[in-house]
Length: 152
Picture 1: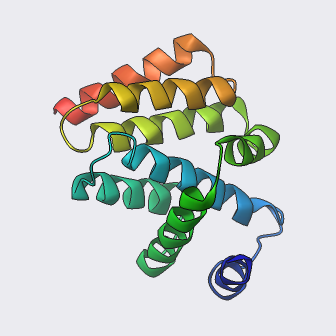
Picture 2 (picture 1 turned 45 degrees about the vertical axis):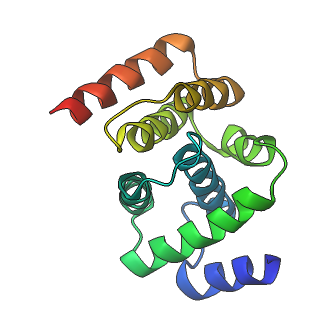
């Protein structure tokens, strides 16, 4: 598993000197959290998978194939993890407050992608927002921003 992750990052996403060597782990952590969101309501919705891939591709400027590979690695990583802390810890260490809010918005995008917000999805966004220290006000504002976009 670790070899697959390392190979992916070496072959597909070379470290950028501006972003530093931790960028790959951050991308994987973010993708794993989004995958957790996609499965929070215990149903696989294709719309959520599409929203997850689009959010990652846009945020990290990845190609479609890089995005698919990252999602596959994140799915395996999320399935093997026992807690969210390994992912939220990386985000806490390396993301600014604005970037953390962006992660919360991405989580809401995945949650709203299937046209309904499940209580488990909302609870997971709240838990992750707490773990990455996003203030409640920002959590609610992100929910409203994404909710209005989803309704359009």
